[in-house]
View (cartoon, rainbow, N blue to C red):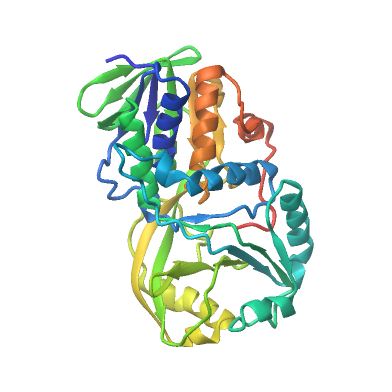
Length: 387
């Protein structure tokens, strides 16, 4: 078969690309290939769902400034045949807390966020204690609170993008890309596990934690590795005031969920690999002590479920790689390596990729610095003071 654009990977990122291509140019044919159509091991449904503007890099802040208002209107924008696409959006804020040693970086990030129009509030420890009286602030230097941020249901976002893209004419194939053919600086076709072959003008690698396997089919390496993380659901017997999504410098990250809480402590020390086994001791050994230190009420807590998932961890610098250029290829575009920020930036990056595919340039947000060239130059672009 022949199509204009092949998107490899039908998670939130791939589905967002398909949606924006059809919105920006309905005449373009886009085919999304997803090997796991029930998304049983896909990363998107296993995400924590946080959406925040608290970053240090202007590009990530701009992506959030675009994506979060998009999520605000998502239910209506993604409606199909009058059925709204509810994503369980909770705008209960985000809170970054740091020890005294982290204040300089937090302050610099805060000033960047303000400059780019974010509604952010600086909180000294006393003010933090006033707002969240259950919190232990004795070892904290300060915090930044973003009241317009929050979280959503990741699987509903994926479903919304996918259903809307299909309604606009995007094709989703339940199949697996097992080979890619290149001629010179172009990829010409994808071979499918079913035995079929798709020819296209452009290819997008939105395979997330599996992105490196797609690149290996073309004979080159990309520093994107699957990194296991756990999303724990836990309850507290003692009452705590309403909390935002909270993150600290030790990677503790959690938020309210139903009658309990959802979160964990991701670690870069985790061995890389396609491991979705559950370590039953991790919550008790790592997460519980961090929770109980910050909120004494969590001395009495119970973890009722643990969901493993995979980050597409960019071990080069922890940020997405977007666009062409890998191994000199001009029509093979990377859109992977989000390192945990993919879902929240799916709208912004989906639009950016669609603009690149259709016009050859970024129109809404300039993501040039997130391109392949930084890997060639050996100049990582890392977030500062950000998990």
